[in-house]
Length: 574
Image 1: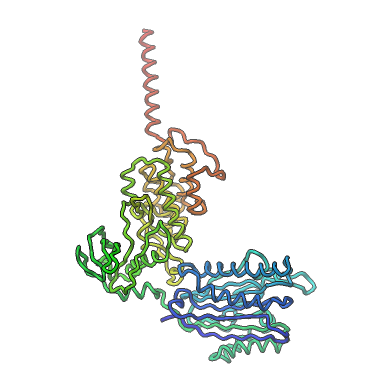
Image 2: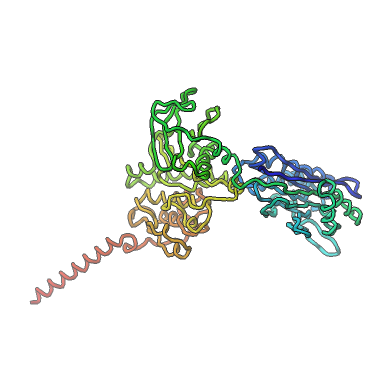
C-alpha cells in the first residue's frame, strides 16, 4: 500500500492589511511519492518589511520545487538542508542588495517550518517562531521551540530565521509514524492565542474536513484577539507503505530467474560469449548486445539464493547504484533501452585485472604506485559518499585496474544508500569481508564513509607489506575494549625504508574508533603525500618493535661475540 495522507490548510491576513504568511503542500505521484515523500510547509514574513510576503513565498515555493529535484539517494535531512541553505543564501543576498546591511526588522526574512513524510517517518524542519504539534490522544505535543530573543519590556525579536545570516542553523528531528497520526502547523498569530483544547475540539468537530478544521482554528485566534496573520495546516497519516515497499522490491519480486547461460546462447537481446566468473552468490558472463554490438558483463543471481527476497532486492541494488554514479572510478551500468524480462544485471566490461592479482604481480611495489592506486579508489569512494552511499565491501577483489592504469570500484551490491535505508527502515551492518570491515561494523554500527576509509587504508597497508595492519585479531573482537587492546603492526617492520609519516597516516586511518580517523578519504589520501602537521611527531620505532626477530638475532650475535671474547681472554690467561 502506498503512502496516503489527508491535509487541510487555511491562511488569512486577519486584522492586518496584508498577509505576509505563505504555505504549501506537495503530494507527488509515484515514483516520487516513494522516493521523496509528501512535503508540507509554511513561512511567515516579517511584517515590518515590505518584502516579507515575497520572502515567505520564495521560501515555500523554492522548498516544494527544489526538494523534489534532489537526488533520490540522499536522505531527507541532507536534501532539505541543501535546499534551505540555497534559499537562505538567496534571501540574504536580496536583503544585502536592497539595504547594504542587515536590519532585523527589514529585508527578505521569514520563519520556516516544514514536514516531509517519507516511508514510515516524519522529518521536521524548523527555524523561527511558528510551531508544529503532534496530536497525542487528547493532548497536543509541541515538536518545535520558538527562536525568539526577549529583550525586556515585553519586546522580542527573531533570533533565527531564513535570510537573517549567510549561514543557516535549522532545527531537525524525525518522528516514527503510525496510521492516524496527526500534525498541526501554525504561525505565531495562531499558536500564541488558541489554547490546546480549542485546537483539539476543532479537529474533532471537523474530522472529515481538515480544511474546515484549519479555518476553525484560525477563527479562534481571531476571536481571541490575535492582531497577526493567521495560517494553519493539518496533516493526517491515512496509510503507510510496508517497510520493504519500493522500486527495487517490486522489480525483484516481478522478474523471473534467467535460464542457465552458455556460450553462443541468445538471451534477452544478448549473445553470450563466455563465462568470466562463478561463485555461490552469482554468475558473470561476457555478452554482446545484438542491437548495438556493445560488449557488457551480464550478472545473474545464484539459483540457491533466488527464493530469498532480501537477496533478490540487494542483487538489483548494484545496477541501481551504478546508474546513479558518474565517476571514471566506479563501474557503470549499461542501458539498452528495452524492457528487461529476467532478473539479471548489465554492467560495463572492464578488461584488466583485479587489485588482488596486481598485488600478486607486485609483491613489493614502490610507494608512488600505491599512492596512485589508493588515490583513484578514493575518488571513486568520494563519488559514492557525495551521494550518501557507502560501499561496505571494499577489498582487492572488488577493485579493477584496466590496461591504461585506470582503477575502478566494482561489485556495488553491498552498498548502503541513505535514501533507501530511511524508506525501508533497515540497514545492513556487516556485509563486507571481515579482514577489511571496520571494527564498528562488528559492534552493530552501520556502514559510514569512515568505514570505507578504514577498508581503503587496510588495502593500502596490504599493498605495501603483504600483511594486514592488525592481522586477524580485530575481526575477532566483539567489544570496543577488546578492539582497543589490539596493537597496530608498524609497516616499518617490513618496509623500514618508508617515511615514518606514511606509517602514521595509515595508523590513523585504521584506528578502531571511527572519530579518530581522518576526516574523509581525501584527507587520508593527502596524508600519504605529505606529513600531517597536526599529528604528534613520533620517534621511529626501535628495531625491537619494527623487527623483533632481527632484534633478537642481533642480541644473540652480540652475546655470542662477547662470550667468545671472554673465552679467548681466559685461554690467553691460562
